[in-house]
Image (tube, rainbow, N blue to C red; front, side):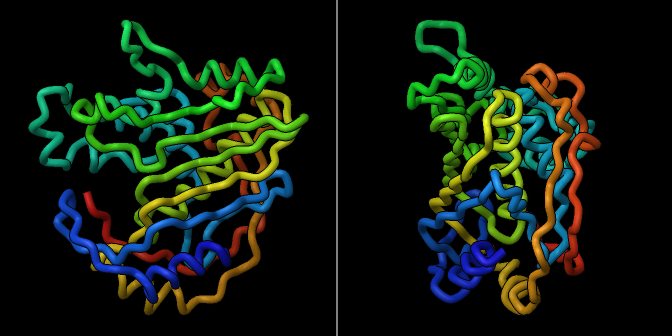
Length: 283
Protein backbone atom coordinates (compact mmCIF):
# COMPACT_ATOMS: atom_id res chain seq x y z
CA UNK A 1 0.00 0.00 0.00
CA UNK A 2 2.84 2.42 0.73
CA UNK A 3 4.24 1.96 -2.78
CA UNK A 4 0.80 2.52 -4.27
CA UNK A 5 0.02 5.60 -2.19
CA UNK A 6 3.50 7.06 -2.77
CA UNK A 7 2.97 6.79 -6.52
CA UNK A 8 -0.49 8.39 -6.32
CA UNK A 9 0.93 11.26 -4.26
CA UNK A 10 3.85 11.67 -6.65
CA UNK A 11 1.51 12.04 -9.62
CA UNK A 12 -0.67 14.57 -7.79
CA UNK A 13 2.31 16.62 -6.59
CA UNK A 14 4.78 16.29 -9.49
CA UNK A 15 2.74 15.24 -12.51
CA UNK A 16 2.71 17.14 -15.80
CA UNK A 17 -0.49 17.67 -17.78
CA UNK A 18 -0.56 15.73 -21.04
CA UNK A 19 -3.33 15.70 -23.67
CA UNK A 20 -4.35 12.14 -24.56
CA UNK A 21 -5.46 11.77 -28.18
CA UNK A 22 -7.27 8.43 -27.76
CA UNK A 23 -9.59 9.55 -24.97
CA UNK A 24 -9.67 13.28 -25.68
CA UNK A 25 -8.85 13.97 -22.02
CA UNK A 26 -5.96 15.48 -20.10
CA UNK A 27 -3.83 13.31 -17.81
CA UNK A 28 -1.59 14.29 -14.93
CA UNK A 29 1.45 12.19 -15.79
CA UNK A 30 4.81 11.00 -14.43
CA UNK A 31 7.38 8.79 -16.15
CA UNK A 32 8.80 5.66 -14.56
CA UNK A 33 7.56 3.90 -11.46
CA UNK A 34 8.86 0.68 -9.95
CA UNK A 35 6.83 -1.49 -7.59
CA UNK A 36 7.85 -4.80 -5.99
CA UNK A 37 5.74 -7.59 -4.49
CA UNK A 38 7.10 -10.30 -2.21
CA UNK A 39 5.11 -13.25 -3.50
CA UNK A 40 7.16 -15.78 -1.55
CA UNK A 41 6.15 -14.09 1.72
CA UNK A 42 2.47 -13.92 0.61
CA UNK A 43 2.41 -10.11 0.81
CA UNK A 44 -0.67 -9.73 -1.38
CA UNK A 45 -0.78 -6.19 -2.90
CA UNK A 46 -4.50 -5.49 -2.61
CA UNK A 47 -5.54 -1.85 -2.27
CA UNK A 48 -7.31 -1.12 1.02
CA UNK A 49 -8.01 2.63 0.71
CA UNK A 50 -10.98 1.72 -1.47
CA UNK A 51 -12.71 -1.55 -2.24
CA UNK A 52 -10.76 -3.52 -4.83
CA UNK A 53 -12.53 -6.18 -6.87
CA UNK A 54 -9.78 -8.77 -6.79
CA UNK A 55 -11.84 -11.59 -8.33
CA UNK A 56 -12.38 -9.52 -11.46
CA UNK A 57 -8.64 -8.79 -11.65
CA UNK A 58 -7.74 -12.49 -11.36
CA UNK A 59 -10.43 -13.46 -13.88
CA UNK A 60 -8.87 -11.08 -16.38
CA UNK A 61 -5.36 -12.55 -16.08
CA UNK A 62 -6.78 -16.09 -16.33
CA UNK A 63 -8.54 -15.02 -19.53
CA UNK A 64 -5.23 -13.77 -20.91
CA UNK A 65 -3.54 -17.07 -20.08
CA UNK A 66 -6.33 -18.87 -21.93
CA UNK A 67 -5.88 -16.65 -24.97
CA UNK A 68 -9.40 -15.23 -24.91
CA UNK A 69 -10.35 -12.68 -27.57
CA UNK A 70 -14.03 -12.18 -26.70
CA UNK A 71 -15.56 -10.10 -23.89
CA UNK A 72 -18.26 -12.73 -23.31
CA UNK A 73 -15.63 -15.30 -22.33
CA UNK A 74 -14.20 -12.83 -19.81
CA UNK A 75 -17.69 -12.21 -18.40
CA UNK A 76 -18.20 -15.95 -17.94
CA UNK A 77 -14.99 -16.06 -15.91
CA UNK A 78 -16.18 -13.17 -13.74
CA UNK A 79 -15.04 -9.84 -15.19
CA UNK A 80 -16.66 -7.17 -17.35
CA UNK A 81 -13.42 -5.27 -17.92
CA UNK A 82 -13.47 -5.79 -21.70
CA UNK A 83 -17.12 -4.92 -22.37
CA UNK A 84 -16.51 -1.23 -23.11
CA UNK A 85 -13.40 -1.59 -25.26
CA UNK A 86 -15.00 -4.38 -27.28
CA UNK A 87 -18.39 -2.71 -27.78
CA UNK A 88 -18.19 1.05 -27.09
CA UNK A 89 -14.94 2.00 -28.84
CA UNK A 90 -15.96 3.95 -31.97
CA UNK A 91 -12.70 3.26 -33.82
CA UNK A 92 -12.98 -0.47 -33.14
CA UNK A 93 -16.69 -0.57 -34.09
CA UNK A 94 -15.72 0.79 -37.51
CA UNK A 95 -12.74 -1.55 -37.90
CA UNK A 96 -13.16 -4.14 -40.70
CA UNK A 97 -11.34 -6.75 -38.59
CA UNK A 98 -14.02 -6.67 -35.86
CA UNK A 99 -16.03 -9.89 -36.03
CA UNK A 100 -19.10 -8.70 -34.14
CA UNK A 101 -20.46 -8.12 -30.64
CA UNK A 102 -17.91 -8.68 -27.85
CA UNK A 103 -15.04 -9.34 -30.28
CA UNK A 104 -11.76 -7.87 -29.01
CA UNK A 105 -9.50 -8.90 -31.87
CA UNK A 106 -5.82 -9.73 -31.51
CA UNK A 107 -5.07 -8.38 -28.04
CA UNK A 108 -3.24 -9.64 -24.97
CA UNK A 109 -3.52 -13.43 -24.60
CA UNK A 110 -4.78 -13.87 -28.16
CA UNK A 111 -1.29 -12.71 -29.22
CA UNK A 112 0.73 -14.33 -26.44
CA UNK A 113 -0.75 -17.80 -27.00
CA UNK A 114 -0.62 -17.51 -30.79
CA UNK A 115 2.25 -15.15 -31.66
CA UNK A 116 2.54 -14.85 -35.47
CA UNK A 117 5.84 -15.98 -37.05
CA UNK A 118 7.30 -14.04 -40.01
CA UNK A 119 7.69 -17.28 -41.99
CA UNK A 120 4.16 -18.47 -41.29
CA UNK A 121 2.43 -20.21 -38.41
CA UNK A 122 2.64 -19.08 -34.80
CA UNK A 123 4.33 -19.69 -31.45
CA UNK A 124 2.60 -20.39 -28.13
CA UNK A 125 4.87 -18.27 -25.94
CA UNK A 126 3.28 -19.36 -22.66
CA UNK A 127 3.57 -23.08 -23.44
CA UNK A 128 7.28 -22.68 -24.19
CA UNK A 129 7.83 -20.89 -20.87
CA UNK A 130 5.94 -23.49 -18.84
CA UNK A 131 7.74 -26.40 -20.52
CA UNK A 132 11.16 -24.81 -19.94
CA UNK A 133 10.50 -23.94 -16.30
CA UNK A 134 9.09 -27.38 -15.53
CA UNK A 135 12.35 -28.83 -16.85
CA UNK A 136 14.33 -26.44 -14.63
CA UNK A 137 15.56 -24.46 -17.63
CA UNK A 138 15.87 -20.70 -18.07
CA UNK A 139 17.38 -19.46 -21.34
CA UNK A 140 17.17 -15.82 -20.18
CA UNK A 141 14.37 -15.33 -22.66
CA UNK A 142 11.34 -16.79 -20.85
CA UNK A 143 9.19 -13.87 -22.01
CA UNK A 144 5.44 -13.75 -22.42
CA UNK A 145 4.70 -10.70 -24.58
CA UNK A 146 1.40 -9.33 -25.81
CA UNK A 147 3.06 -6.56 -27.84
CA UNK A 148 2.92 -6.95 -31.61
CA UNK A 149 2.95 -3.63 -33.51
CA UNK A 150 2.09 -5.45 -36.73
CA UNK A 151 -1.22 -6.52 -35.23
CA UNK A 152 -2.32 -3.31 -33.49
CA UNK A 153 -4.83 -2.55 -36.25
CA UNK A 154 -6.45 -5.96 -35.66
CA UNK A 155 -7.42 -5.39 -32.02
CA UNK A 156 -9.54 -3.01 -29.97
CA UNK A 157 -6.69 -1.79 -27.73
CA UNK A 158 -2.91 -1.89 -27.58
CA UNK A 159 -1.73 -3.83 -24.53
CA UNK A 160 -0.83 -1.73 -21.50
CA UNK A 161 0.97 -4.33 -19.38
CA UNK A 162 2.62 -6.02 -22.31
CA UNK A 163 5.58 -8.10 -21.14
CA UNK A 164 6.21 -10.71 -18.42
CA UNK A 165 9.76 -12.08 -18.10
CA UNK A 166 10.30 -15.09 -15.84
CA UNK A 167 13.71 -15.88 -14.34
CA UNK A 168 14.75 -19.02 -12.45
CA UNK A 169 17.51 -18.89 -9.81
CA UNK A 170 17.95 -22.30 -8.21
CA UNK A 171 14.44 -23.36 -7.23
CA UNK A 172 13.08 -19.81 -6.91
CA UNK A 173 11.10 -18.13 -9.69
CA UNK A 174 11.09 -14.37 -10.26
CA UNK A 175 9.02 -12.14 -12.52
CA UNK A 176 9.65 -8.79 -14.21
CA UNK A 177 6.50 -7.25 -15.68
CA UNK A 178 6.56 -4.11 -17.85
CA UNK A 179 3.63 -1.76 -18.39
CA UNK A 180 3.78 1.03 -20.98
CA UNK A 181 0.74 2.93 -19.63
CA UNK A 182 -1.26 2.86 -16.41
CA UNK A 183 -4.54 4.51 -15.39
CA UNK A 184 -3.48 4.60 -11.74
CA UNK A 185 -6.85 5.20 -10.00
CA UNK A 186 -8.68 2.48 -11.95
CA UNK A 187 -6.12 0.12 -13.40
CA UNK A 188 -3.23 -0.17 -10.99
CA UNK A 189 -5.14 -1.98 -8.24
CA UNK A 190 -5.94 -4.64 -10.89
CA UNK A 191 -2.44 -4.71 -12.34
CA UNK A 192 -0.71 -5.22 -8.99
CA UNK A 193 -2.95 -8.21 -8.25
CA UNK A 194 -2.32 -9.66 -11.72
CA UNK A 195 1.48 -9.46 -11.52
CA UNK A 196 1.40 -11.13 -8.11
CA UNK A 197 -1.00 -13.89 -9.17
CA UNK A 198 0.87 -14.56 -12.40
CA UNK A 199 4.10 -15.32 -10.55
CA UNK A 200 2.30 -17.33 -7.85
CA UNK A 201 0.45 -19.46 -10.41
CA UNK A 202 3.38 -20.11 -12.73
CA UNK A 203 5.61 -21.01 -9.78
CA UNK A 204 2.96 -23.44 -8.51
CA UNK A 205 2.39 -25.24 -11.82
CA UNK A 206 6.11 -25.49 -12.64
CA UNK A 207 7.13 -26.75 -9.19
CA UNK A 208 9.16 -23.78 -7.96
CA UNK A 209 9.11 -21.38 -5.04
CA UNK A 210 7.85 -17.89 -5.87
CA UNK A 211 10.26 -15.06 -5.17
CA UNK A 212 9.89 -11.36 -5.93
CA UNK A 213 7.75 -9.81 -8.66
CA UNK A 214 9.06 -6.55 -10.13
CA UNK A 215 6.52 -4.25 -11.78
CA UNK A 216 7.78 -1.46 -14.07
CA UNK A 217 5.35 1.26 -15.17
CA UNK A 218 6.58 3.67 -17.84
CA UNK A 219 3.74 6.22 -18.10
CA UNK A 220 1.66 6.50 -14.90
CA UNK A 221 -1.25 8.91 -14.99
CA UNK A 222 -4.43 10.21 -13.40
CA UNK A 223 -7.14 11.52 -15.72
CA UNK A 224 -8.42 15.04 -15.08
CA UNK A 225 -11.90 13.78 -14.16
CA UNK A 226 -10.35 11.39 -11.58
CA UNK A 227 -8.09 13.90 -9.84
CA UNK A 228 -10.47 15.27 -7.21
CA UNK A 229 -11.52 11.80 -6.06
CA UNK A 230 -7.89 10.70 -5.76
CA UNK A 231 -6.57 13.83 -4.06
CA UNK A 232 -9.52 14.69 -1.82
CA UNK A 233 -10.90 11.24 -1.01
CA UNK A 234 -8.62 8.24 -1.52
CA UNK A 235 -5.37 9.89 -0.44
CA UNK A 236 -7.05 11.13 2.76
CA UNK A 237 -7.77 7.57 3.92
CA UNK A 238 -5.57 5.47 6.17
CA UNK A 239 -4.69 2.03 4.75
CA UNK A 240 -5.51 -1.21 6.55
CA UNK A 241 -3.21 -4.18 7.08
CA UNK A 242 -2.63 -6.26 3.92
CA UNK A 243 -4.71 -9.41 3.35
CA UNK A 244 -3.45 -12.81 2.19
CA UNK A 245 -4.22 -14.84 -0.92
CA UNK A 246 -4.63 -18.62 -1.11
CA UNK A 247 -4.60 -20.57 -4.39
CA UNK A 248 -6.08 -24.05 -4.76
CA UNK A 249 -3.09 -26.44 -4.57
CA UNK A 250 -4.85 -28.78 -7.02
CA UNK A 251 -3.95 -26.37 -9.83
CA UNK A 252 -0.89 -28.20 -11.12
CA UNK A 253 -0.65 -27.56 -14.87
CA UNK A 254 -1.33 -25.12 -17.67
CA UNK A 255 -4.12 -27.44 -18.77
CA UNK A 256 -5.79 -26.96 -15.38
CA UNK A 257 -5.71 -23.19 -15.86
CA UNK A 258 -7.08 -23.58 -19.38
CA UNK A 259 -9.97 -25.88 -18.49
CA UNK A 260 -11.49 -25.96 -15.01
CA UNK A 261 -10.07 -23.15 -12.87
CA UNK A 262 -12.65 -20.63 -11.61
CA UNK A 263 -12.56 -17.74 -9.15
CA UNK A 264 -13.62 -20.21 -6.44
CA UNK A 265 -10.05 -21.54 -6.59
CA UNK A 266 -8.75 -18.28 -5.10
CA UNK A 267 -9.44 -17.03 -1.59
CA UNK A 268 -8.53 -13.76 0.08
CA UNK A 269 -8.54 -13.60 3.88
CA UNK A 270 -8.21 -10.64 6.23
CA UNK A 271 -9.31 -8.05 3.67
CA UNK A 272 -10.36 -4.79 5.31
CA UNK A 273 -11.06 -1.84 3.04
CA UNK A 274 -12.69 1.57 2.79
CA UNK A 275 -15.81 2.27 0.73
CA UNK A 276 -15.67 1.92 -3.08
CA UNK A 277 -14.81 4.96 -5.21
CA UNK A 278 -16.50 5.25 -8.60
CA UNK A 279 -13.66 6.61 -10.75
CA UNK A 280 -14.65 7.57 -14.33
CA UNK A 281 -13.45 5.13 -16.99
CA UNK A 282 -12.00 6.40 -20.27
CA UNK A 283 -12.57 4.21 -23.34
